[in-house]
Amino acid sequence: MRTPQQQQAIDLFGYSYSIDQSKTYDEIGAFGRYHSRLQKIQIAKDISNNQKESTLLHEVLHLISFHLRLDLSENQVAGLEAGLYEFLQSNDIFSLNKKEKVIRRL
Image (cartoon, rainbow, N blue to C red; front, side, top):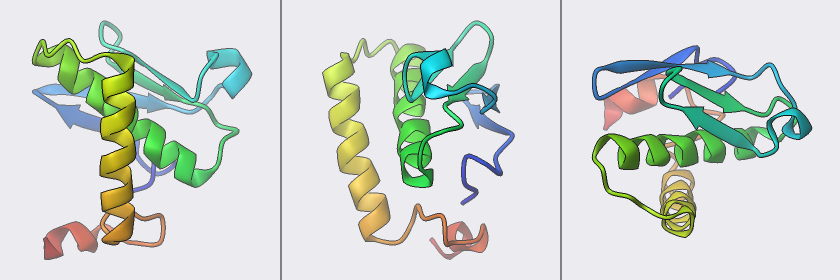
């Protein structure tokens, strides 16, 4: 799996969302933000790589909630992010040290 730094866009439900890392935490006002209308995910450029991975997962969960009309609260998204990210890290699935071929092993 590519890191957010390498990833230019992700595909979700037939939409391509660009990943923008051109702004700082202070400029965005958060670690990240999604813009469904603009089909863009912003991730702060001045946070750690682990925070970038976790933030990408968090914003993707918001987009899933948006597209499926799940109406998940921020607390629910944050809880799912924490649990999924820990699972992915603990099982060496979502790691900065892995190359794309890891996904093919699954």
